[in-house]
Amino acid sequence: MSRKFFVGGNWKMNGTKKVADDLLANLIKGPLDPNVDVLIGVPSLYLDYVKEKVPSNILVSAQNCYKVEKGAFTGEVSPAMLKDIGIDWVILGHSERRQIFQESDELIADKVKHALESGLSVVACIGETLEEREAGRTECVVAKQIAAIKEKICNWDNVVVAYEPVWAIGTGKTASPQQAQEVHKVLRKWLADEVSEAVSQSTRIIYGGSVTGANSKEIAKESDIDGFLVGGASLKPEFVDIVNAKK
Ligand code: 13P
Image (cartoon, rainbow, N blue to C red):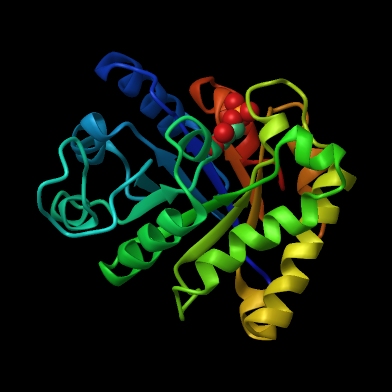
């Protein structure tokens, strides 16, 4: 089965309205490969602003949301609110949420479940730390993270899995294409064994961690790598080259 290539730009906590305008202008100029799903992960405060201006071929995503619809959760945003302003995607489980904000596998799984039930599509992030990799625990860490999500959901149609090794995020140390492929293959087998062959074949597994215009073409050649989740380079003109990595 062919999986449509998927490239997300995670702006993280960066930008202003002016910066958003410039980034959108760059995407509009493109040209973007029409055979790629392109998503931008925008700070909550600017979602509405960006949604109003973005062309319809670009998906707009939140970078987080809470696990219930409404209530006394100061500072949080719910999937219902995102839907209300026309947002259909959310990035959940990013390592910065896990590490800086202490989000557990269980909380992330609850968020994924509620987001899907609320009609959002989800980019679910997993990945090991350097310490875990050096201890030979990469496979068991990512399996535990994805298993927590599997426990709570029964439909993977609207899930994209992002493998983002923590040691490669924002460090300039990209996983080699072989290192990334190895983990993606493990994840695809895990989906086949633990969910179903059909889900394993249809679910996009994308790679994140110091992806650039320069290294994206090589990584994109690997058979189990279905796209990228890009941080720093999504704030630069080269993001267009990453979108077009398969061309
Ligand atoms: P960098 O591309 O800056 O390493 O960040 C990756 C990332 O965290 C995307 O979510």
